Length: 110
Length: 115
Image 1 (cartoon, helix red, strand yellow):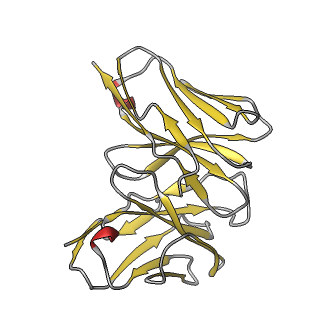
Image 2 (spheres, one colour):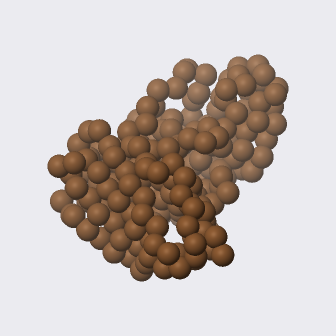
């Protein structure tokens, strides 16, 4: 079963604009991770935020985590055409598996 | 360094057949996990192997099985294929099998089509 739910399911913006994607989950977690997937191929790890962290940055990416609301957001600033992809949040509880949401399809228009 | 490699990249099988998918983890990684991604959905966990032992199993029927070899490569086997098994099968490796705060490195996947 899917743990996380991303919102929106699809997002289309102009190049240079910021893109924000949200993720909600249901159970307690050790960490939450964001992945990118281009054209239905492999997943690329973007960022990991631990349950005791509230915000994390990596280049043009900013991730926030609110464990009280069981939600996270991914902000991509100054978007580029190459950012067009599907973005997934995944939670980890224990050492074994990642539980993914259904993803947000992001389209950057030139 | 080579990333996670999966073979084959594409595969077409007939209902009822059997399929074997292969995965080589990143050198030094001892944990391998398998995920199934149906079109339009997020990946679903199938198995995790660490140090050649099964450490986790998702909600998949017994038609799905896997194993890990001494060199830490892994095979996913699916018997009696159904149309619903058509999906992208992803393999991921991690440096620490029992670690919680580690990222997973994914291969490019095997696209399985069952006709």
